[in-house]
Image 1 (tube, helix red, strand yellow):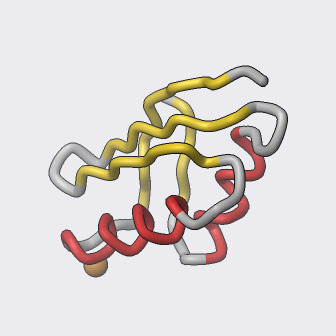
Image 2 (image 1 turned 90 degrees about the vertical axis):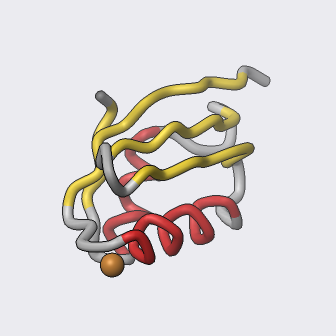
Image 3 (image 1 turned 120 degrees about the vertical axis):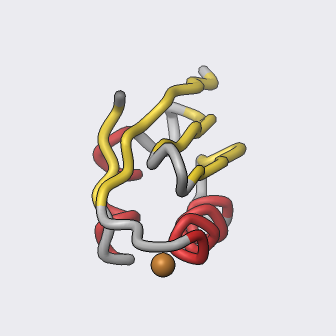
Length: 72
Ligand SMILES: [Cu+2]
């Protein structure tokens, strides 16, 4: 099991509640260990278990909420 910690750019947020929503959703996603989303900088920092989820899986989850996320 390898834990990866990476920064991402987030597109499509229009207020702080968007950031909170993404953060709450991802923190309940299997494989995600910690997540912090910052509305002002439009960045996220995510720590995940690469045996359970990857960047594509994270992006797919976030797309379901209507946002885009890409590794920095
Ligand atoms: Cu919003």
